[in-house]
Each structure stands twice: as C-alpha cells, then as structure tokens.
Length: 512
Image 1 (cartoon, one colour):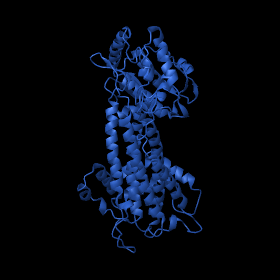
Image 2 (cartoon, rainbow, N blue to C red):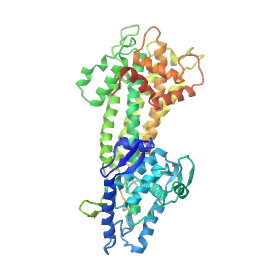
Image 3 (cartoon, helix red, strand yellow):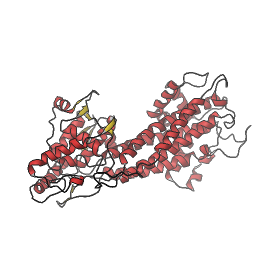
Image 4 (tube, rainbow, N blue to C red):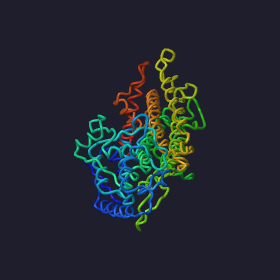
C-alpha cells in the first residue's frame, strides 16, 4: 500500500487524495518527530511559568482572561474537546473526515503547535487503522478553525464519542481504538486547542473538488464537442489563432481540447446546407470562453490550496525563535473565497451545457433533428423530461452559487466577531460538483443520441469512441420511449468515474 510521509514543510494535493480517497498509510518523518519534541519543550517551559499564556494556561475565546492553575489544565484540554464536539445534522463523508484529520496532522507535524510526538503518532495510527470519527454537517463557522468537525476527530483520539470502523459500522470510539491496539491520548497543555484550530476541513474539500473538476472540465469540453457535431456547427471558431489574440490560458486549453475531439468529423461546418446560418449560438460558439474562464478560476484556487497545504495553521503558534504568539491565521477567508468562486464557475458551466441540450431537443433550432430526439414524436416524448431534470439541477446550482463567504455571524460573546463561513462554502461546492456531473451526463446522453440520428455523416473518431463506450456502459441509443432514469444514472456513473475522458483520450491522447 502507498505510504505518505509527513514532514515539517507541508503536504501536496496528491498526498491528501491518496490518504482521503486511496486509503494510503501515513508515517511521521524523523524530522517531524524532532520538531514536535522541540516545540513541546518550549510549551512545557511556558506552562511552568506563573505568567498566563493563551492556550497553555488560560481559557479560550471569550474566556481567555481566566488563568488556569496547573492541576486543572488537563481537564481544560479535555473539556474544550468535549464541549466543542457539538456538531449536528447528517454525517460528513468518510473521505472528507480523512482529509480533515490528515491535514490537521500536517500542521501538527510542522512543529509550530506544541503537540507531543505521541499525539501526532496516535493521529497517524487512527488513520492507518481505517477508523473514521463521526463528524456532522453543521458546527463550523470557518474561523478559529473548523471547530466542531475537528473536535469530533479529537474526541476519537481521546477514546470518546462515536467512530466508523474499517467495516463501515459505527461504534464507540474507545472500542475501536482498543481493537486496534491504540491507546487513547491524555491531552496536556495546549494540545486540545491545537487539535481544533485549523482550516483543514474546508481545505480538504477544496483539494478534492479541484481534482474532480479537473476531470469534469475535460468532460465538458467533450460534451460540448458532441453537441457541436450534433448541431452541425462549425469548428472554425476553435482555431488556435483566434484564441491567441485573447490569451486566457483556460480558454486556449478548452478550445484545443474541443478541436482535438472533433478532428476528422464529417458533421462540422454545414452552415450553408438546407438551413443556412452565419454563426452558431453562443452556447456552442462560446463554449471555450465559458469553460476556459472556469479553468482559470481553478488555477487561482489551486494556488490558494498549495499555499494552505504548505501552511501551519494554529493559534497560538510556536515560532522558530521560541516565542509563542497569538495570531489570526485560522481565519478561513482565503479558502472560503475560492470555494465560492468555484461554485459560480460550476453553475455557469452547467448552465451553458443545459442550453446546448435544450437546443438539441427543439426542432426549430436543432437543424433537422426530430422534436425532443423522439422516435415517433407525439407518441414518444423522447428526452423532454431529461431536460427538465437538467434544468432543475442548473437552477439548484445557481442557488448554490450564492457566496457563503459574504455572510458572517458573530460568536463567542463577540470575541469572534467576523467569521468566514468557509466550511459552508465547501459543503455547497461538493453538492455543486455532484450536480455538474449529472448535468454533463444529460448533455452526453442527448448529444450522443443526436449524433447517431445524423445518418450518413460520420462523427469524429474521438466522439465515436465516446459514444461506443457509453453504449457499452449500458446507456441505450435512439429508439422508442423507455424508462429513462436508469439510462441517466448509467450516464452519470460513466462521467463521474472518468470513463468519458478515458474513452476520448484513447484516441486524442491526453487532453489539457
């Protein structure tokens, strides 16, 4: 099994995906263990002094003015975990929780938190055992870290609360730790706070969304190319020289992808046939511009993610010169903004895909295709309601595009008076990515059927490969009305698993 070694300088997006989705094992580097021990020595020295130090010998948040005596400090650290594990609502997905835990471990291993090496090792042991704390949907405001979600994870380290075992069964965390030979941690000064104070949940969801969207944007270029073919559109608008004079990188990449997918098609360029037109509609002609803007948004979001992956987010932090300083690095604004920005781009990409689908189904705009791509229009309704479903998804995506980061609800007796809502931005982006997949599956379903109805004209080898593969996946082609939901579900799985991109790239080579 693949192993990810965590050092002091952060981790990569590939590391996060390997642990969260691939079940990779986690090890601490020798450098990390040394840094953990050194930082812990500094915290222990401060804890022995009579002067109060936030997070070490004081209360938290609005209660930070109380100095905590040494005999109460272990209880203080336990209490912050127990009281902050206050999430509600549905359980969060296993991959999100694993990303959350791994990214918290990443910060702990930086040597900036003051956590003992044995606590970090327990975090790695829990991940390696396949134990997943039960984390709930609601409880993070995206400031002072993803507090409730991280608290539920810390509770598992203490052997309390509930967790899911590697068999998928939820049981008391103490039982699961015992079965895997993992001793519950006894938290000491600052350690409870250090386990809760990070942007790890929203960052993990950002990293996974970027991985999903990388595949979905290639899928969108493919479905747009299929729709262009089905509508007998022109590929001349994809010429590199046209995109060179407006040199947005994403736009150029999308146009190049579509051009590669359409190479060798007999369906493009029929503008002066029986239904002459000068230009294609915007949803066809401007596909690279819209998808390209989304790709450039992704590039910016990836830059933010890379900076966060290299960061140590905690409060207070142990600095290289030995100082322990309070700070505001736990504020989720940088991550929240790009999560919201991506949700806007996703909604727009879905919207333009739906417009192409609608055009394919309208006999007045489809340039010779049957109404709703029906076998016997009137007796058959064809794909009429598939487009309704797609439209409902797009409408939901527009609501999900409303930014969460524009909101702030003060908390902790006005000590935490401006929050990022980044966790909420991440949760709605996950829903948006799911819905985009479904929208593209409907376009694929409609466009592949429409291309097959263009008898006598051969599609491009790449689009033909896509159609052949989706038919083998159980998505049926033209014919009389049938129970449509299973076809749409199969198309969804085909896109979601990356098989559409795989089928096309077998012909074109890697898409950009």
